[in-house]
Amino acid sequence: MQMFDCEQGSQAWFDLRCGRPTASKFNKIVTSKGEPSDQRKAYLYQLAGETVAGAMEKSYQSADMQRGIIMEEEARNLYTVVREKVTKAGFCLADGLYKYGCSPDGLVGEAGVLEIKCPKASTHVKYLLVNKLPAEYFQQTQGQLLVTGREWIDFCSYYPGIKPLIIRVTPDEKFLSALRVELSVFCQELQDIIDKIK
Image 1 (tube, helix red, strand yellow):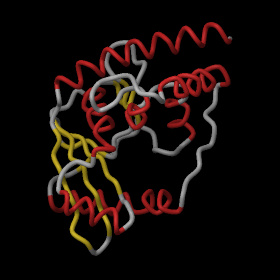
Image 2 (tube, helix red, strand yellow; image 1 turned 30 degrees about the vertical axis):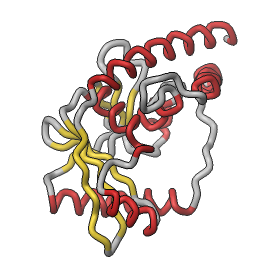
Image 3 (tube, helix red, strand yellow; image 1 turned 90 degrees about the vertical axis):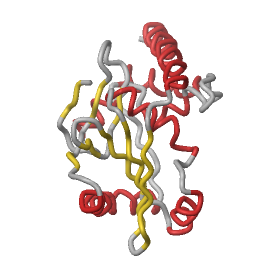
């Protein structure tokens, strides 16, 4: 992977993400079963528009999302205490053609990635009771493993005053094989659309 050292949320970070498929949106490209998502066309159009316009549209941030961003550093520090030291990451691009990337919440040693979620209390409690990776983050975590080429990713759900949930996720090779194909097709379709609307 190629890593860019920039602050997440900065203009440099937005510029790197602009017009590129990112792991947090891979669910818009492919389902957890490795099939094309119903949302892929709208995502294609969004990224094509960003590429040609040269800027990303502002997206809505709920109060829960804003609180999660504020608490992320607290969660990262807790993970460092209970597991191991984390290096903050800016934006990572996959090896090869560098057409898609991800923004990990941290890199752990030489082999790991950290993904932090700071949901509201009721959601965190649900995650603790189920005690496995929430299905809605499957494509994102697998996508981060694909982009970074790392061996595992720790999914960490955090809420102050309640024990954290830390689930280690390893590559699902069957899914990753399908994801590689779908990303290749998606990126080619994206380029075709860009060429048509320029």
